Length: 190
Image 1 (cartoon, helix red, strand yellow):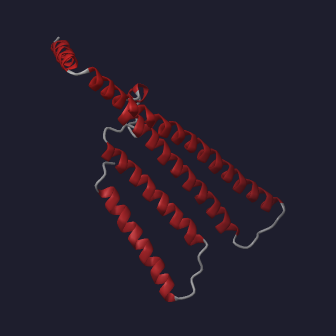
Image 2 (cartoon, one colour; image 1 turned 30 degrees about the vertical axis):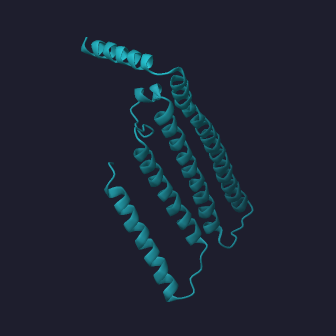
Image 3 (tube, one colour; image 1 turned 90 degrees about the vertical axis):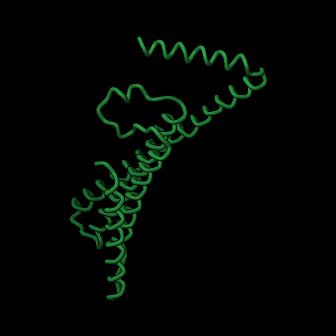
């Protein structure tokens, strides 16, 4: 009952404001407000990009699986076989994570600029629910950091170490990543 009264008062105030505005001002504000729909380009193409990355990553994993079967059927064991398998799988994980970044970005933009996604509110998962630009940036930053960690791990697999100093740099980089991840997740709610 109280809510209906508030809605009616708000409608009356809005009508009074509209009456006070000039025609040009109303048209300009309506055009300005409707220009938010350009965000749909980013939403749609983010989803297309995510689908493309999911497909490419899946084909990459299929290629790794095929290579493993082919290698074992032929009785071969090439040099750096394990590193190549792990690197291929990590590369696919990297693509999946980037696809997830695109999905979060698309959902976030849609919810912030266009409308809440009603069907998402019916589910128990709130991972794609975004209420502010800061929340969107925070979610994107966390996934992007994970992409960087996975990319770092993939590159480390193919790095050769020629001395103690290089091993020390390697250990220091792992320590820096660990500290960064600790602080990244310390402030978040898990």
